[in-house]
Amino acid sequence: MTELVRYEAARRALAEAVAVDEVLEIRDEWEAIRLAGLVAKDVELQVHAAKIRFRAERRLGELVREQKKTVGLAKGGQPYQSEREQVDRPATLAEAGIDRKLSARAQRIAEMKPDEFEGALVLHETEMRSAKGRVSMDLTKVAAEEKGREHRRNVAQALSDASALQPTGRKYPIIYADPPWHRNQGVTSRSYENHYPTMPWLEICDLPVKDMVLPDAWLFLWIPRAHLLAWHEAEIEATDLRTGEIIKVRCQMPLASAVALSWGFESYSTAFVWTKNDDEHPDEAGGAVLVRDQDELLLLFKRGKGLPKPASGEKFGSNHRERSRPLGHSRKPKHYRRMIAAMGGGVPVLELFARVDAVNPLPAGWDAWGNQAAAASEFADAVAHAGDPPARSADVASLPIGEVVSSVVVADGRADTAAPPANRPGANSIDDGLDIPAFLRRVPKAEPVHKGALGR
Image 1: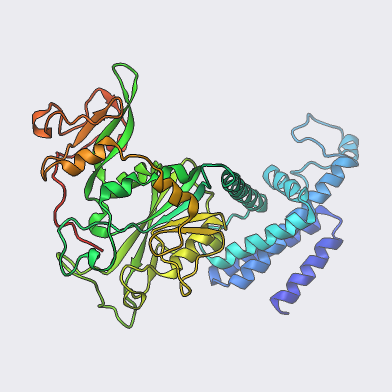
Image 2 (image 1 turned 90 degrees about the horizontal axis):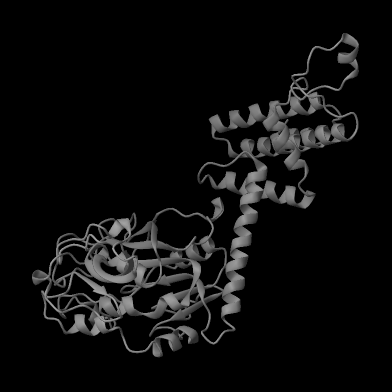
């Protein structure tokens, strides 16, 4: 008898079952089959067995509910009763072979609407077949997680659509950015500037991305390995422990964190690695100063709660391997657009510095901004009307190499550049009187603007 035939026979038996012990016998049999399939790594067997287990638990919940409505359930732990009283009373859960956890779970499954139950079975099967992470064997949790995920995505979509009707323009739950990082070594034969215009790191930080983002959002940020931990200044809010006043502090931190914080994203989540070769070209690599570049990093930052955790079928591996040479200089694989669209469940995305053409169209619901894409009007307007850059931007630009301020307190929007770092007390560390985020409490010694930072 094939597994499918056995599965259909078990479904019919459950539909006809009128006693708890019949249902429990079928459930236990197929749970043993599921575990055997797990050991044998037989996914088909596991899928069919899991479905029968859930159908058995649903039928069990229905029988328990029916008994509650008719003769009722006896409570366990009752005082001594006469033989006649014991014969006349209904059975307890324990006497029926049902523990309380199983009973509660079975009744929750029985309360699910038929279409909701069948949908949860499909979702659970998808997760089992994806073989990505541990799969819950509580169907109600699977259904509840999917409901929560769908609700949060619907909220993000609704908020983004509502914001698009406002004068300030659409706000996005996802930003995908591949900034044209300036390589601080001057223009050479290998410079990025030979291929496209670049931007100083400070100007990238100053882009008004924060104004285009929802309170709960993700940022996918491409950054060359050599730039990842290069020190750069960014502005953060801190509490003066002496006065309780919220003030702004400029301090050095890794460039990736500086950009993310400047754009409104408070926390780092994870990273993806693009390996730029394949099995046929394992030694292919880019330029080399210290090492030959064979990969690039895509970082994921979060604002607020971020977006909901993707379902198992929407999760991707942290590494993608694809040659860079056929794509063209600095162009990223289409894989990452597909990945972000899947992880976000179709919510709106703004891609900054995007390359869009007939060969590389945007996914549905995406907007693009950049000199190689039709500008997203809201973001283009925001950039055009962002106002004069902060005073600090001009100060940094005008300082000679080696005199970049390491940490600057800004009390009224003006930068404190009255003295070079070496001549100011506490120049090499944040003032101890400030309460700042823990991950920024250790600030390195003042460093000059980085010369010769490696490009991608």
